Image (cartoon, helix red, strand yellow):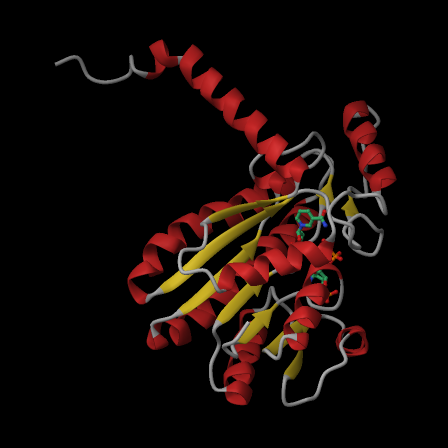
Length: 279
Ligand SMILES: NC(=O)c1ccc[n+]([C@@H]2O[C@H](COP(=O)([O-])OP(=O)(O)OC[C@H]3O[C@@H](n4cnc5c(N)ncnc54)[C@H](OP(=O)(O)O)[C@@H]3O)[C@@H](O)[C@H]2O)c1
């Protein structure tokens, strides 16, 4: 990577976020990383202070995000790349998850992303360049049993990225929605993952899926260092993708979803096209 860019990365104290921060600093880039836990963030990063800015941010709080973006521009003079990485999995059927559990998941996974984009865009728009990378999930394309709220939140991230890309392309700003499969981070650990606090016995299939996911912890096929490298490489590309799947599992799930959508649309076509006015 030749050109020194300024990167703003959320959820940087562990997992994909920490891999991104460390690879970028190693490559001589300027990085602002956000976390709820500044001590964990600074202990995971070994970099000179002129290159790295550690920020305590409450992503669900618009003012907190605004201050973090301003602090980044004050320190480094600009922002080139925004990576909305912070997020967590939330498991449970819709009736098992409370309004608070559901809204909090959207606060972090969706509204945090919107807050960052809202406050970064004025700088990117003015400089007529930039790249916003939103980390969604394959769950946002092909959700799995027992993860409805997580699927909805990540689906929202993909949808908002698609329209954002259209809205900001005239300003020279690029957008990529990344949909990883299973990667070996803290994602499935109790410190990150939320499961419904009031499970209902009847939801046997939901419990079985959660058990299966929890058992996967530590054996996920995806390597977070390779995922971070792949995302960093996007930024140097003249025409990066709007959607990027990461992992063979993500590709398989996406292909299955596309095939089933095509089949269903085709099977129900007669009703679909029967709803216009008869002229
Ligand atoms: N690993 C996977 O299998 C996988 C698959 C698909 C998508 N993803 C997505 O990839 C992104 C990174 O996850 P990861 O795999 O690196 O997991 P991770 O190791 O658990 O790291 C998640 C990061 O997100 C932040 N975060 C988690 N819960 C938060 C909350 N309630 N409020 C604010 N920040 C919170 C944390 O930031 P702090 O520094 O504040 O702790 C943490 O650094 C997430 O958006 C996740 O949904 C992961």
